[in-house]
Length: 580
Image 1 (cartoon, rainbow, N blue to C red):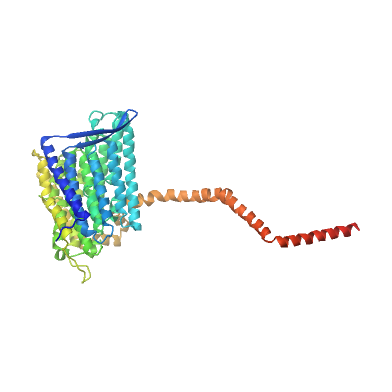
Image 2: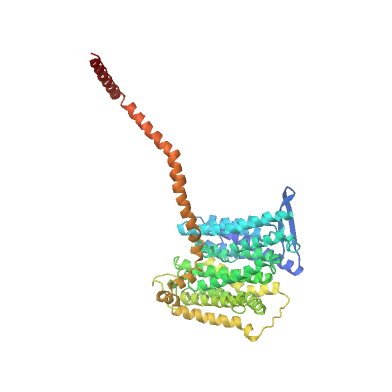
């Protein structure tokens, strides 16, 4: 096959080269404990310098390397997936703008330059979510944009509070000024901003809605860019959060998010939404372990999760592409006989998500659960962790049952194949990383072995919960428990659980219905009612009536003249008769 100089191939070569360079330098910085801090003063306002700062340390470089690697493979995959789109160049440029915004956010130790990347992500994500230009996409795009605006406002307020220190480089003040009131307020605002970007309760509704975007965008957004921005920001601010009230509240909220998303995914039939809820569950896991003070573990899981989640979306995209854009898992079945390579990649990604030993997800997930097993702070958090882990395996087993096994649920003449060069190579690269990435990251980030001593019951609890979750998911799918419970006696309970605890309804129509109704009444009685009647429109209608009467006089002037003559003559005659 000849190599074409398309924008996809050029972007793939450029981004993958940058990725390898960042990885090499990042590992060198990690081993040497080396950091580069660059500062460029653009302008000074009232003694407050506006500076562009760049922080290059092992954390930012390795994360950049991963984002660039996934972006390059997603763009390469997009050439075939989006091949029928006449505007594919515009699509790729939007994706590149998205990646550039993420780069700004990663390398910034300064709140102003962080806001540049933060707002860039929000703006470009809106353009990508509404890419297919239908009513559903517009609604999803507006929900995504407005939810993220709350976090943008919180970040702007944090910037305003940073004026108290005379500089926006937060990295200087995290340790020294952590006990001051200003930094505590900034901590609250940053937590709020991170919660909106990473879709924690009560801002979770936008994440499944953003599935209206093309699948390659979903692979990028849900693995390493938009949703991970909040987690990455909190990793940078982690010294400020240790043992504080925002950290405790965040721990509870993220634990509930993890549980809610895992439970909701077991009642969903849309393939992309199941994977989106899986992302939400993993984000809750990262936020929860981060709020407990283990920022390196959160960073480790962030990287490992990005690898297999991008692969999961790519495989889902290949399946949807072959299914002629059907996303309902009930229409699938026996895919393993028709798309063996894609299903193999999907199975690797699913097993990595479940924490199968020696795949990418195992190293970070198992370590997190063992650390939680050692922690004695809260039985509720402990239960949320392990129950959510079981639910993850549960919905994965259900997905496997519906889509990969059983009988084909498609029409007999429906063609399905693995023969797609770009998609094949895009998935292959991420599958290799999903197998070996976890162990490599583990060796780099934790070169000193950790000794974790736990009783046998706690040590095997994660495995036990996973096996039980897999059995439960498979059995529940086999007997279609969700539909039977819904049809028998508890339809509202299934609706509540399956709709993310009514969050999409509460935080869209629930928030907007009352103000919109009230404002409509006010505008119809005020601005468009009495004020129009007594003001402009009333004056206009009166003048219009007067001008019409005057016009009728002008158009009938001869008749009026003769009528006037007759009236005058009659009056004159009557007066003469009266006088005589």
